Each structure stands twice: as C-alpha cells, then as structure tokens.
Amino acid sequence: MKIIAIGRNYAEHIEELKNERPTAPVVFLKPDTALLKNNMPFFHPDFSENIHHEVELVLKINKEGKYIKREFAHRYFEEIGIGIDFTARDLQDQCKAKGLPWEIAKAFNGSAPVGEFLSTSEIKDFNDLNFHLLINGELRQKGNTSMMLFDFAVIIEYVSQFFTLKKGDLIFTGTPAGVGKVNIGDRLEAFIEGQKLLDFEVK
Image (spheres, rainbow, N blue to C red):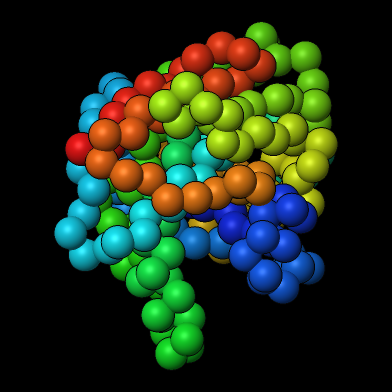
C-alpha cells in the first residue's frame, strides 16, 4: 500500500502559500508508516514547531491499473474518504530554500490521518462535493471539488503514468485554503457533506 498525494490543487491555497500555479498535478508520496487510522491521536513531533493541517479528500483504489485514461478513472475507486496531510512547514521551507527534496516535511510518521470512507454510490456528483475541517469546534477549512485545478479523473490518469496503482492505495487530492498550525490539545473533525468521518486529537 502506498499513499500518493497531490499538492497545489486549489487556487486559493496556492495563493496563500505564494506558490507557482502548476500546469500538471504536483505529486509526492508518503510511506505506509505515515498512515494514521481509527481516529488514533496524532503525536506532535519534536522536530517541528510549525505542523500545518491540510484537509483533503482521499480516493481508495480498488484494483490494479496503469496508464489509465481519464474516461475510465471512475472504475478504479469505489470509496471516497477524508484525511489530513500534516506538513512540517518549517522543515519544508528550509528544504525548499536549499533546493532539497522535502519528504521529511510531508512523509513523517503519522502524517496522514485518514477517516472513514463513503461509497461512491452515495455521492451524486464528484465535481460538486463539499468537505470541511473543524478545529476545536471552529471552521478552519472548507472546500468543494469544483474548485480543484485537476479533478479526480485527471489525477488518476496522470499519476498512473508513473506509478502502477494497486488495490488499497490512497490518493490525497489536494487541500483548499485555510491551512494553519496545530497545537497539542487540538481536536480535529473532518466532514464530507456534513457527515463526520474523522475525529482525533493532537497530543
């Protein structure tokens, strides 16, 4: 099982971090040790003082495929969930400044909490899907898939050129604006269309 993640997929998030708008999906990987399931707590690492939350919709791949055409992409996932792409922003900035890879800022242990999944049969329109994140009961991020630069089908077509997708793989599809620092004691709750699918604490 692997975790494939897409960066810079919402225009307002690109603007808030002052990044360049991509012409193709920005792809990075997280190892299976990044996965955090069953609403287990996230333990804030000592190596960073600026861990950011990034709420994202997550596709669960249901069968093996490569070089998948976008018109067939919907056949490769039957469930959509929600997760957090935790980012050590201070480490990422340091790595970027030196022109170095920034996996240590994205792929560390527990950096990919994932909640429950919904069947795609429950979703009316992949291109009009609302999701949001509460921290300590306060709305911090909200998004709709209509705001994505690259939709689910384009993402699957693109990443499957480089990586064979296998059953159980997860694709994080990008975060909307509103990312920010988490602190020990925070409670994060993530929702798709008003249904809470992820609920955990930072310790």
